[in-house]
Image 1 (cartoon, rainbow, N blue to C red):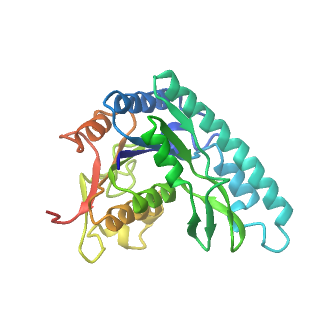
Image 2 (image 1 turned 90 degrees about the vertical axis):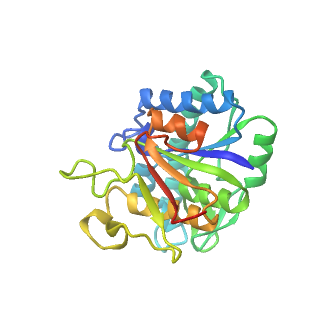
Length: 277
């Protein structure tokens, strides 16, 4: 069993609009949080997004389209390589920061062990990750380029990695660290935006949050709808046993979640199954 999985969002630790630019202070804050987990002997896996270390190359070369697509095979393969080089730069920074804070962090990459087919994970290294945890280490894994049986290659997101781990082992909670306090009813920079402290998933699997089930303009706010969909699936596939928390990196809320399993009055968004006893 894992006590928690912590996702370091790409927007939380990198400047997503500036190629390969780190948010040094925010990464340090995230590393200190993981150090708190280690100090309290919590069993954790760290997953980080690529942010500006990977997305630029992946988009430019169409890596997610795969190299089996007619007329794009060599260019896509080139992009595969360049995307991985970029992502590995970020992973090096993340692991070095964690180790500097006293965390026994071990870098892990999905590329040579995870494989996809038609959008589904068909092989993984979850057992190896859990073995590292049991041996006293903190595995650090990330979104990556992986092989795909149906189209040659694709992008495996860090969010998919988290969902897959939750499907294969018991996880106490999942914490997504972002660059804002949580999920809002509209983009946080828009007038009238308010933080949603709780998002309940109904027994039908739906949610009563309008902007998540509509085709409104707020459905495409930096990919948040897609990420929320993954968060919902994590809660749903675990029958609500694994709640998901979303809060700002470096916030008191983050510390409360890892140590006490809830926000304890601090700002953030909790995703849970409605009326779960």
